[in-house]
Length: 337
Ligand SMILES: NC(=O)c1ccc[n+]([C@@H]2O[C@H](COP(=O)([O-])OP(=O)(O)OC[C@H]3O[C@@H](n4cnc5c(N)ncnc54)[C@H](O)[C@@H]3O)[C@@H](O)[C@H]2O)c1
Ligand SMILES: O[C@H]1[C@H](O)[C@@H](O)[C@H](O)[C@@H](O)[C@H]1O
Image: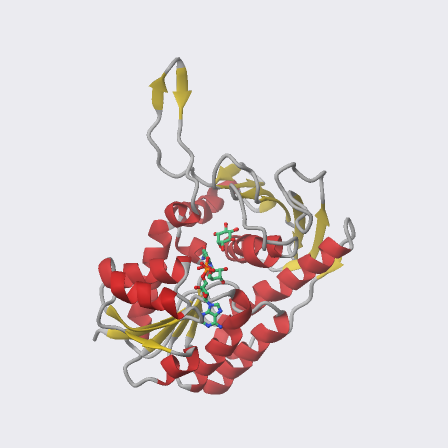
């Protein structure tokens, strides 16, 4: 079966996901597009999916009989309304991170999916599909029980509209999810400290910042978020265990001996750093959607990330103070896998 996909939000990642479904992956075809900026959807139709229909609203797209499954790749604050509409229509839905911008919003999605009784939502936490993180998780069986994690999430630059809380719900959200998965653990508290801000930041963004998460098993995770680091897109992670240390591998790069120096290029764009992971996560989505369901990171994972993310934003405001994180019980729908 070829799954007929509608894409809501055709900006950077919506366009890139449409491209991979049309040109790279198997089992899916783009039949519908929608964006509040209609010209953006029209441009994706012209460049990537000439057979697709452009809809005025995401809701119209979801209701279309030409759409079997939905990709939500609009701005974070608009995800909840579209994911809820897809669940109401009984259509599988891939939602980019964040599932919702508040824990309450993510909980409404969990409640709707539980009431539906079958998984329909996959959240775009692509790092769980990244070869490096998968290898790192496997290596933890040799380095012994984890004690500490040192991580860094560095972007070369961000737009002016990117403000201090976005460092958490737009950027750290990847670490929040991937460390739950990597350590098979949940968070109990969050603390944020701010060094002096870097010269390249602006008035509404304190950058960099260091987030310390403590887990139920007592692991302490330090993550530096530095979104004006200038030199490249750089994701670092080192897990210190009882018997040894395991590090996330660097992306493959040609090492050159040139001009009297040893050179190793560093990527500058998330699209390139995680290109293979996006391919694998969406192939996984297409496979499950063909069966009318979803696999991969769940709405519960999206909700858990939103709970931790809200706590981290409160921890930013309470600079230096630990903020407790508590979770409700996991519904049966999310207990397998
Ligand atoms: N997994 C990842 O690594 C990754 C990478 C980039 C972006 N993202 C996420 O994907 C989402 C989109 O990010 P982006 O970088 O593509 O942003 P973007 O600004 O390039 O594109 C978003 C698009 O959504 C459209 N839009 C906004 N509100 C809408 C609405 N109500 N209905 C329909 N369309 C609407 C905008 O017009 C825009 O074209 C964000 O949630 C972001 O966090 C995830
Ligand atoms: O939306 C992007 C994307 O999720 C990237 O992976 C992350 O590094 C950026 O900080 C974020 O703004």
